[in-house]
Length: 259
Length: 267
Image 1 (cartoon, rainbow over the protein chains, first blue to last red):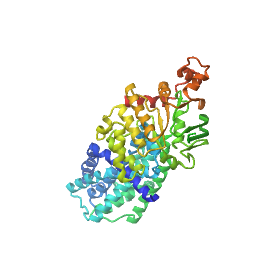
Image 2 (image 1 turned 90 degrees about the horizontal axis):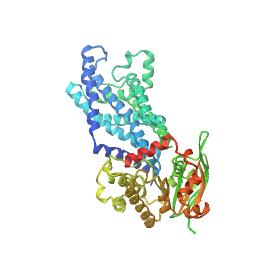
Image 3 (image 1 turned 120 degrees about the vertical axis):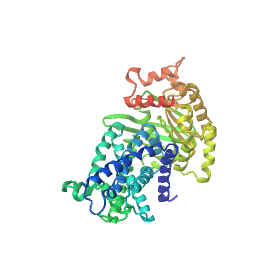
Image 4 (image 1 turned 60 degrees about the vertical axis):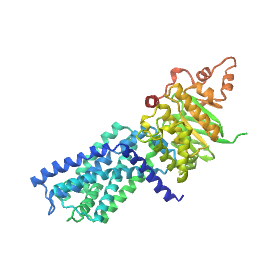
């Protein structure tokens, strides 16, 4: 088998492994739907009425809907590493690593599975947005791009999470680090307010934050009348490049879980 | 003379100043059942981790089925099966699904996957339970499924780290019956670690007793019993003689914790 074909096949086998678990128990999809609902229905509506956020000619609820989708993806993906620690405490990681599966395929396959899990968040956010009167772009190409960005973003952040898991190795430490990282990533982005109103130091951090480019791409594809701040090719380049670098680092660190 | 399937030369693994495995040298013949015995912390699991390419050695070399563990890791991984001490099948999938994923990871041809899985389930006495979630299995069934999963690709060497820890005597006997059949039917070499001396005595062609990272004794059980001066020596006495007193054994907190958690999950 050609190495590239083999790599792609193994990646999808790992994704299949994760998704089969979901088929037997999909309660997590239902419980995770609550968070975006709370943010959109409570935070979004309150701030929309207050008029405190200046989002140009886009209504605040329209502005925040893609940000809440990005936030949901981040929150689901960033704690994905805890599953890896659980698999390490069992012997599943060891068994994967003793198989001839490329390490990068193990890492990328898990990332993709996180991506597919977060698609349910996209469905919830679209449903709520529809109810709240957000002007959505329903063109098939835009929808396809939203799916791609969501899967890539979840792959990016779940791989970041896996790297943290490989370093800290215990659930207790992981939970601490995960919580420390999640909020700064979220608040130092354009998810719930535009970067234009940030102080310069925070604006600089937000430009280094991949979530900012995820939100920009989602906002451009999801909304009927929105243009990209950074350019879609720039957004995709940052997301793909960051994901690739993280997968390579993850593949390097993943075997540490077996030692 | 049998072919050598496992050749270990001066294999050493250090963790900082601590030497877990110290210049281990031994060889195992094809089709042999080889037991690695020793107290917790003697270096058995570290040895298995190096031989299965999970842990790089600090120095030394080993060849498994002709492949170097340091330069031909993928070749080694294709030639071996591995059953870690901790539970290594996923409780939220069915037995069939656990096997299917590994059939794919080991590149079994698509048309052969179903046949192999059916055969493996039948061989391990799990045909009727293949469609059930593994979380509902008994400890013995879990271990048999893990062995089935690790042997789907017909490995030349099967490494088992404490394969019967936490199992009751009936489940242990069932696991061993299947391991013995595995060797008889496929000529698989079995390399395992255990604390149960009676298992080693009943099933091993040869054993090595490790103490403080080194091989303290190597041979058949009869040879080792004779090495203490003959008479009616037992393997237990041999073990105590070569593995040191009870007071300096016991392993690390992590060793004990892993073993107890595994026992709890399988029990």
